[in-house]
Image 1 (cartoon, protein in one colour):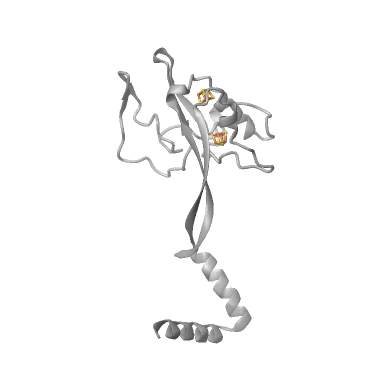
Image 2 (spheres, rainbow, N blue to C red; image 1 turned 180 degrees about the vertical axis):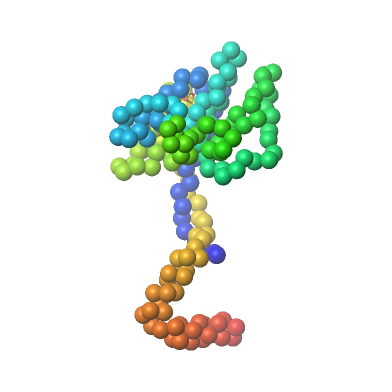
Length: 183
Ligand code: SF4
Ligand code: SF4
């Protein structure tokens, strides 16, 4: 259901694969920042960014954890870079049942990049701050989006209005509104 237009900040991290040297500092800081308590450990297996590495050919591809997928997808892609063939799922961002990537190692709970949202907020995502090669470039822009009104929010709103004014009165107002719109 469509709602009113709202300004929304869109955050993006652009990846310059050619600048990545595979140092894995991004994995270290991400896992440390999200450790509980914060900075109490660093374990790249818990990181929300992983660097797919092929050191012999100096190929390093940082991949961010995206949405959780309930089931494996049916279609797969094959990538060949500089003659090396990569696993079908190598560059996928999803936390999915087919592999262990982007899952907490002990609980298997899915991991997703949250752009380091925190209180106090970070001036920039930490992986971007720690990437000394500028392979990760942070961008922020404002977009106007139509806000979705959730069905349950609408129902809660209607219920509280009905409690306050009575259902008959609300139906009466709705009928008047729709008549005036037609006219
Ligand atoms: S910190 Fe930057 S250079 Fe190092 S692995 Fe991550 S993306 Fe690559
Ligand atoms: S933006 Fe933050 S949460 Fe996302 S991968 Fe980088 S350090 Fe991790």
